[in-house]
Image (cartoon, rainbow, N blue to C red; front, top):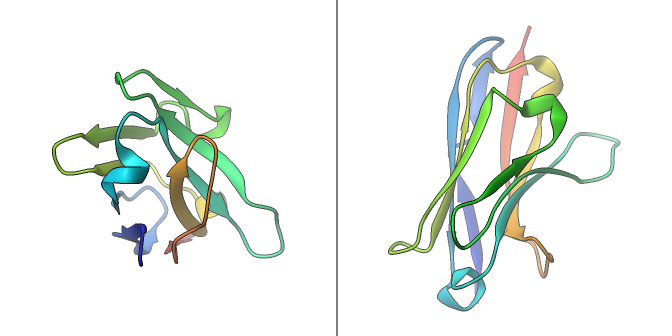
Length: 113
Protein backbone atom coordinates (compact mmCIF):
# COMPACT_ATOMS: atom_id res chain seq x y z
CA UNK A 1 0.00 0.00 0.00
CA UNK A 2 1.42 3.34 -1.09
CA UNK A 3 1.80 5.68 1.88
CA UNK A 4 3.61 8.70 0.38
CA UNK A 5 3.25 10.00 -3.16
CA UNK A 6 5.43 12.89 -4.26
CA UNK A 7 4.80 14.89 -7.43
CA UNK A 8 5.55 18.20 -9.12
CA UNK A 9 9.19 17.79 -10.03
CA UNK A 10 10.66 18.59 -13.40
CA UNK A 11 13.34 20.37 -15.36
CA UNK A 12 13.68 24.11 -14.79
CA UNK A 13 16.27 26.76 -15.51
CA UNK A 14 18.23 28.39 -12.74
CA UNK A 15 16.13 31.11 -11.15
CA UNK A 16 12.90 29.30 -11.89
CA UNK A 17 10.26 27.87 -9.56
CA UNK A 18 8.57 24.56 -8.85
CA UNK A 19 5.91 23.46 -6.40
CA UNK A 20 6.17 19.95 -5.04
CA UNK A 21 3.26 18.08 -3.49
CA UNK A 22 3.18 15.04 -1.27
CA UNK A 23 -0.01 13.12 -0.60
CA UNK A 24 0.28 11.03 2.53
CA UNK A 25 -1.92 8.45 4.16
CA UNK A 26 -3.85 9.74 7.13
CA UNK A 27 -2.01 7.38 9.42
CA UNK A 28 1.30 9.03 8.51
CA UNK A 29 0.12 12.63 8.20
CA UNK A 30 -2.25 13.17 11.08
CA UNK A 31 -0.65 14.85 14.08
CA UNK A 32 2.89 14.44 12.77
CA UNK A 33 5.47 16.94 11.68
CA UNK A 34 6.07 16.48 7.97
CA UNK A 35 9.33 17.14 6.19
CA UNK A 36 10.97 17.29 2.80
CA UNK A 37 14.30 15.64 2.12
CA UNK A 38 16.45 15.40 -0.99
CA UNK A 39 19.14 13.17 -2.37
CA UNK A 40 21.54 14.32 -5.05
CA UNK A 41 23.49 11.82 -7.16
CA UNK A 42 26.32 10.27 -5.18
CA UNK A 43 25.28 12.00 -1.96
CA UNK A 44 23.38 11.04 1.15
CA UNK A 45 19.78 12.04 1.62
CA UNK A 46 19.53 15.34 3.49
CA UNK A 47 16.91 17.33 5.33
CA UNK A 48 15.37 20.29 3.48
CA UNK A 49 12.42 21.62 5.49
CA UNK A 50 9.95 20.61 8.19
CA UNK A 51 6.52 21.77 9.29
CA UNK A 52 4.92 20.81 12.57
CA UNK A 53 1.31 19.76 12.92
CA UNK A 54 0.65 23.29 14.17
CA UNK A 55 2.39 24.99 11.26
CA UNK A 56 5.80 25.91 12.68
CA UNK A 57 8.54 25.60 10.09
CA UNK A 58 12.28 25.15 9.87
CA UNK A 59 14.66 24.99 6.91
CA UNK A 60 18.20 24.02 6.07
CA UNK A 61 20.29 27.14 5.73
CA UNK A 62 20.91 26.82 2.00
CA UNK A 63 17.18 27.05 1.14
CA UNK A 64 16.07 29.67 3.64
CA UNK A 65 14.34 32.56 1.90
CA UNK A 66 13.86 30.53 -1.29
CA UNK A 67 11.75 27.51 -0.25
CA UNK A 68 8.46 27.49 1.65
CA UNK A 69 6.91 24.41 3.21
CA UNK A 70 3.18 24.27 3.90
CA UNK A 71 0.52 21.69 4.66
CA UNK A 72 -3.17 21.14 4.07
CA UNK A 73 -4.43 19.00 6.92
CA UNK A 74 -7.81 18.43 5.26
CA UNK A 75 -6.07 16.87 2.26
CA UNK A 76 -3.24 15.08 4.11
CA UNK A 77 -0.87 16.91 1.77
CA UNK A 78 2.37 18.77 2.29
CA UNK A 79 3.84 21.19 -0.23
CA UNK A 80 7.23 22.66 -1.01
CA UNK A 81 7.29 25.89 -2.98
CA UNK A 82 10.76 26.32 -4.44
CA UNK A 83 11.78 29.68 -5.87
CA UNK A 84 15.08 31.03 -7.18
CA UNK A 85 16.21 27.50 -7.89
CA UNK A 86 19.92 26.78 -8.28
CA UNK A 87 21.73 23.92 -10.02
CA UNK A 88 22.80 22.65 -6.59
CA UNK A 89 19.12 22.07 -5.77
CA UNK A 90 19.10 19.24 -8.32
CA UNK A 91 18.06 16.05 -6.53
CA UNK A 92 15.29 13.57 -5.97
CA UNK A 93 12.94 15.10 -3.41
CA UNK A 94 11.10 12.99 -0.86
CA UNK A 95 8.59 13.71 1.87
CA UNK A 96 8.22 11.85 5.14
CA UNK A 97 7.61 12.55 8.77
CA UNK A 98 10.35 14.16 10.86
CA UNK A 99 11.14 10.61 12.01
CA UNK A 100 11.22 8.92 8.62
CA UNK A 101 9.63 5.57 7.97
CA UNK A 102 9.41 3.83 4.59
CA UNK A 103 10.11 6.16 1.67
CA UNK A 104 8.01 6.91 -1.38
CA UNK A 105 9.38 7.04 -4.91
CA UNK A 106 10.31 10.72 -4.74
CA UNK A 107 10.14 13.31 -7.49
CA UNK A 108 13.09 14.42 -9.59
CA UNK A 109 14.03 18.09 -9.66
CA UNK A 110 16.64 19.15 -12.19
CA UNK A 111 17.88 22.73 -12.37
CA UNK A 112 19.90 23.67 -15.41
CA UNK A 113 22.45 26.47 -15.37
